[in-house]
Length: 230
Image 1: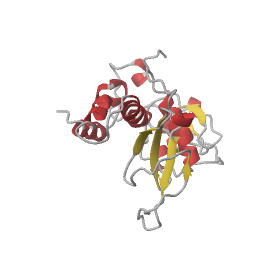
Image 2: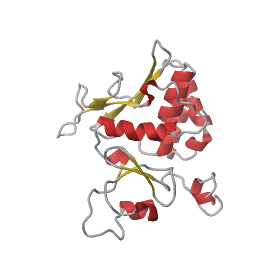
Image 3: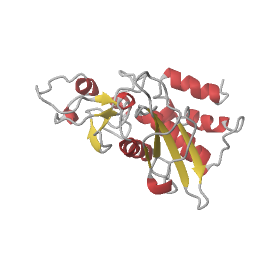
Image 4: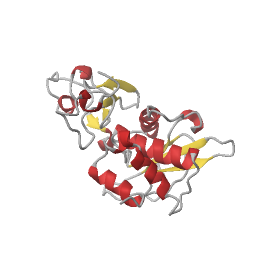
């Protein structure tokens, strides 16, 4: 495999419109375990089992093809998995800092901070914060993430879980939101949160084609709409 690992180096015969072709795998503690056969991109998978997923495609792992009768941990997608705030921070930090071309030496504490919004048994969102990890900031309950530059110049990026589940599921979307929009845009470049200036952060996401081209059409359209991009 070359550094150009999009669609396994074969853009002529393969396509990946949803960004779900290749997958990194993490344990439920948030520790990185490796990749499926395709590489570090696409949807993030959470799995605690003993199967050698490095010899499987992501589909084989998620569908449990060739699994032993007894195995611990059901492989699930990050966006469908309830995690502790610390485990989610471990995953989101690792994925974000794998973004090429951005220096994260100003990221406060070297981590993505996480706070959870509890969801009750009836599916209603709580109005108070739940589990948290790091020096998190109280971003709006409806927000995916928020950024604040501290007096010492470090950049605090906080993201919010909903019922323990991340609002971001793929490598590219995590990097686009947390790495490009939040850390680089609102942090390094001091782009204001208020519109119309806020549009510039969305334009950064749009111009970063390595991530933007692998987002879902829905995610791409939201970025273009919020960025005032025709």
